[in-house]
Structure formats: structure tokens, C-alpha cells
Amino acid sequence: MGTVIGVNTGSVCFGLLCAFGFTLVLRQFPQSWMILRIAGFVYLGWLGIQSLRRAKTQPPASAARVAEGPAAAAGLTFRDFREGFITNVSNPALATFYFIVLPGFLPGTGSFARGVLMLTAVHVTIAATWHTVWAVAGGTLAPVLSSGRPRQVLDAASGIALIYLAVRFLV
Image (cartoon, rainbow, N blue to C red; front, side, top):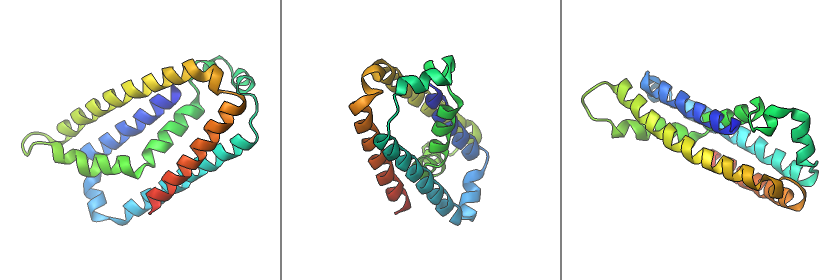
């Protein structure tokens, strides 16, 4: 659930930036898109490498969660929030959605900021609902997927997928 909150906080940040003029700044300084793409590449690549490393040397996940305390057992850790947030704010696809696609859905009349904030609220509500469903499903399957061979396979597959996405963001 910490990741759910972090990811959706990142979306809210993009919505606020779009509503209050950051889109105009991006149009004035197109090189900022390259900075965002490089940041996304570096962060996703780093996450992918970490997943591949965990796949090779996997400690028992249940012991790690116990060591982190009751908040970790409930799925509410700052690390999870931070990783979800950074993943979303360094995601060029999400930036493109908020800064290029979303304004195209606004009518020509009315407050631009209010329209962007309304669409952001709709997007975050739908996304948070799905993210929560996935988190609950993942929590339900955690005893099966959190240790041993299933965890190694999941970490390896995640690592490969994250590195692939990182390269796609850069290209």
C-alpha cells in the first residue's frame, strides 16, 4: 500500500505541474524531456539490476519483513512509498500523458487549471483503485510468492522487464 500511495502521489504532482504552467516551461525548454528520459532510464535500470541481484541472492522475505517492523507487515513503509513515487515521477510516459495528452481533453472555455485538476482527480482515483486491487491480490499471494524459487523467478522477470523498459524510455 505504500507503493500505491507513492505512485499516485507522483501522478498528483504531475497534475499540479500541468495545471499551474509547467507544460509551458517544457515547450520553452524541450531539452528537459531528455533529462526526464535519462532520469527514468537510470532509475528503472537501477531497479532492474537490484531485482536481478535479489534473484541471485534471495534472503527469506518473511525474515526481512519481520525485521522492518509492524508497518512493513502492513505494507506501509517509506521505502515502498519512495520507490513508487520516484518510479512515477521519472516515468516519461506519464509525463507525456499529463503534459501533452491530458490538456487535449479540455474544452477551449473555462479554467485550464480547474479542468486539469479534475481530470487528474479522475485519473488518480481510477489508478489508485486498480493499484489497490493489485496490492491486495499481491498481499494475498505473498506467502506463496515471497520466498524460494517463486520469488527468484519473480525478481528475475521483474529485473529483465525493468531493464527493457529503461532501454525503451531512452530509445
